[in-house]
Each structure stands twice: as structure tokens, then as C-alpha cells.
Length: 337
Ligand code: TXA
Ligand code: MG
Image (cartoon, rainbow, N blue to C red; front, side):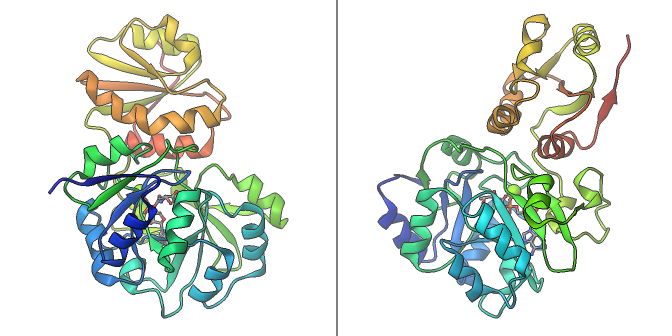
């Protein structure tokens, strides 16, 4: 059966579906999520099935206000309170020791749960009206780029989820920053709009960047955040990142055929192949809003390869992290021809 498309006024319909144990895609300020009542095991199982998500990859639990946090975890460290006050509602996910209310299917068997209080008004209204937290991973097929508009969701999941609540485009466009607060250190597991520096400044403490943020992890290796070991954000076209100056990049790609080029706005006019821009060179907001749409667009060119330019220095950690995974860590430095 086709997936129902609801609009932003249909909050009650959305809540009714969730109460019945159905799964519904909803907008957030980062990316669209597939939501299920986090306390309903059968509903959460449907999420894993619809996405084709490996069952050892845990889901984020979304809440509508700060008090909900205290009802779901055994302990809220002082630094978590400071970070929540500063960055919630917003694109920050924090990991805590879970209590019995959260079923193990949500955390993929872990004793720890990832919690986020989204900024998006529609998402918070749904959670409040349901009166229960929502388990919600990004609303893409596992391995594909995350969805930043409802059409992306429909492309991946039509017929596999009950409904999509069609909202505005996601204003941030890249998933939340994930940090682990379950040990003495604060560990960054996934970079996002809120940077390690933002977090450090708020709590007056260094943030440790998990080594997997910028490096490949073996599929059987033990990792802090299981999601990072899977193929991610990949279009069907093979991607290669090129880290170089504008001059070298342009010379390099203009010597190629049968390729599509993904570059900065400033590069477009010099490129002789089909090319797409993912924003100005140093505009994180612009790049994060466009990145996942651009990754989906690449396949429309039916090219054998896509070359993606990344900045030679000062590259944004969140953008780099997503691009590295999309390109399966294929990177060429300073190509000379
Ligand atoms: O912005 C976002 O975070 C979006 C929107 C929908 O809120 N959600 C999202 O969820 O990106 P998902 O499932 O696509 O990514 C969640 C990430 C995964 O890498 C997962 O492994 C990690 O968070 N994660 C979830 N629970 C965890 C836990 N208990 N311990 C460690 N990592 C966890
Ligand atoms: Mg995801």
C-alpha cells in the first residue's frame, strides 16, 4: 500500500497512527526521521525492517521537554544538564545509562540510550500529544544519504511506512552531533552543527574525538557507536574525494571524461564536465543544507565516477565525516597532472 502523505496540520492523524503502533516519517531540523512509539516493541521492529537496518545499530530516542530525560535514564551528569540547557532544543544527542522503560530493541541490546530534544516544532508537538518518546533514526534506506525533504523519504520508503508528515525542508540538513557522557570523558561519536569547540566552551572541558570520526573501522571491530561501522550516505555512483587547491582540482577534473564533478560554488564556472555545487567553500550552513540532496542528485547523471572537491585545509568536521563515508574513504590528495 502507498504511504500516506500528511501535512503539518495533521498532527492528530500522525499521533493516532503512532498510537496504533504504525511508523511515520516526520521532519526535524536536522533530517527527516522514521518515528515509532519508543515503548512499543512491535512498532520499533517495523523501523528496522523498513530501513533494512542491521539490528545491532541503536536508535535515538526523541523527547519533547527536559523533564522527560529524567524519566528515561538512571543518572544525568552535571555536564549533561549544562549542555541540555545550552543546546536543547536542538541538534545535540547525548548518551546516558538507560532505565527499564526503554526496551532493549531501541538500544540494540546496549545499556545506554541516545537522547535528543529536537528544535523542530512539529516534532515536539507530536511527541507531546503522544505523551511518549519517539524512537527515530534518519528516514532513509540503510546506507543511503539521509533525507532532507519529504520526496527523499518517499523515494526510499514508499509503501514501507504508513505515512510521511510533509514539513519544511530541514534547516540544518545534517544529522545531530552525538556525544557519549557515560564515562568520565566527553567523547564525540558523530560530528554535527554543534562542534567539539562549542561543547568544550560550554563545559570548560576538552572533548575527545572518537578515532572513528575520521578513520575507517573494520566491520568486526568493537566500536563505541555501532552505526559508524556501516556503509553510509552512498549514492550508486562511485565517489572519490579530491583534497586540493582550486587550480589543481580544475586541471585534474577537466582532464577526465565520463565523470560528474561536485565542487564549491566558486569552482563551477571553470569546470567543463557536468558539475553540481554543494555550497561556498567556507559556508558550513550552506554545505550542510545541500550535501545530502547533492549526494542523491549525483546518480541522475549516470556517470561512472563522481569527483568531489574538499577544502585543502580547515575542512568542517561534520561535512568531512559524511563525505568520507559516502566515498568509502577514497581520497586523492593534491593531484598533479
Ligand atoms: O539528527 C539526528 O540525529 C536524526 C534525526 C531524525 O533526529 N537521527 C539520526 O538517527 O541521525 P540515526 O539512527 O540515523 O543515527 C543515530 C546514530 C547512529 O550512528 C547510532 O549508532 C548512534 O547514533 N547511536 C544511537 N544510540 C546509541 C547508543 N546507545 N550508543 C552509541 N551510539 C548510539
Ligand atoms: Mg542515519
